[in-house]
Length: 257
Image (cartoon, rainbow, N blue to C red; front, side):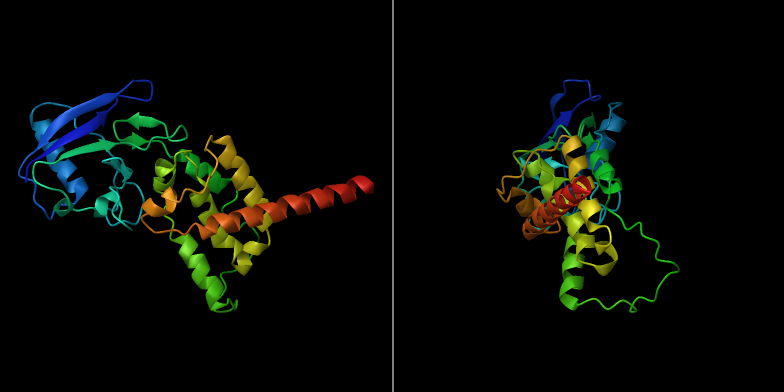
């Protein structure tokens, strides 16, 4: 098949950027979207032109690196699919495809389709881990965990931090991402020891990074390649509310003393 690509080109974060048009010829239907871009880049390089910059790593829907907005939809809009898992058979011969980077103030464009998502890393660093001293490595089955809790933790841990939820949200909210990271540890016994500090620190960092507020439109869940549920946002709100109330109560006790 032959396709027309309208690709966002931007030299760096200070450049205005604009769309450029390219022809993708003799595209094989079984190619992934990124393989198609590889072929286009090979053609550009052979012509002595700058290739299109885009992120990729695992190409198996695991790492969350392939951050592309395709025809206005994060990862192309296929349910439970990352851009690297999107195949060209979902497009039609002669179709025009528009390719953009994530659009969010907290994800500045570095070059072309590559954005800086270090804000997600800083949110995790703010509290998305267990820091209590657990001693030597325990046996995997020595801590009894109800299956319901284990399943819920695994559902949250499925988040790959790709940022599609932010790209799809009209407010550029990171609530789905943060809620998944908070909930993953909050439901496990190992994470309960510092659950309050974790949720307060991560939400504080999320706000500091400039992400918008959640208005529960559901667009984040719709484009999430791992289909993280909106239920985790509700859990985050509960965890945050409990932590705030407990901190206020403790502050009053200290003030009264």
